[in-house]
Amino acid sequence: GIHSSNLEEYTFVGDAGSQSDGLVYDPKLGPNEVKGRFSGRNDDRWAWTTDNMMTDYAGIAALASASETLKGWNDPLAKECLSTAIKLWKTEQGRPTPVVPKRFRRFMGSMDWSAALELMIATHGAEPYKHRVEVLFPQVIQNMEFQGWTAVRALPYLDASYKKQFRTALVAWLPKMNAMMDKTPFGVPPTRGAWGGSGQVAEFGTEMYFLHEAFPKLVGPEYTLRAANYLLGTHPASNVSYIAGIGPRSKPKTYSNKRGDDGYIPGGVIQGDSGIH
Picture 1 (cartoon, one colour):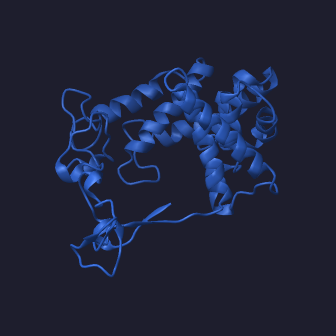
Picture 2 (tube, one colour):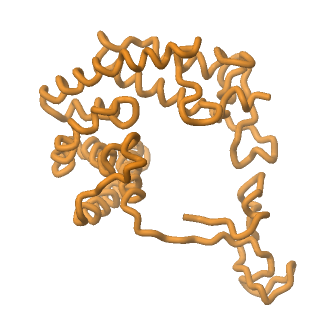
């Protein structure tokens, strides 16, 4: 990780390119003194390393997913992402069976589920990732609201019995989900666990899209359309789109590295109604 070394560094706004002078800090030099590749400007950030199984599995999932996205556009990088993910998977799987800390079980289920899923997809159903997905599948689908829904992406690589398992879990979850969505006039979870809630709404729309694609008779397109409508203007406080550059009227200044410069980044998303004022 990267850690800011002082308060000024932490509260920096504007173009990240001007965050540092690019020289190594030397406390023996004056604030504006430069000597070779050293300076007296204390703007260095501190790098730290860790050996964390949860972080590693998240990295594996991200790299495997990136490898699929990069194919046909940057094939060398796609190959590097996948080979790195596989190498790290072998390292982590050589350790004792991963156990998710109790406070995270509601959201994660199993620590290596996402890594196994993304590697299976990236390798088109190869082992040992497919086997690990099959082992974890019954456990994961018990919590459809969080990690469970992602199991729908595994179905094309598994036999028909897994689709039946998933369908049963989905049918049991849908009434609970609909009851939760009925608590707001918008039919989306704008305040589910975070301020503003735009990220949760976008995630909800994405989840329901995948579920609709796999089970169109159980899950209609209206859920994803609700999420899109909410983000584009059907929300409290105003009818301004939360997505910069999308919609007749949008919020152009989103929370990003350029926020201090009043920068406009198309596609940026603000947090929600609390951020519209």
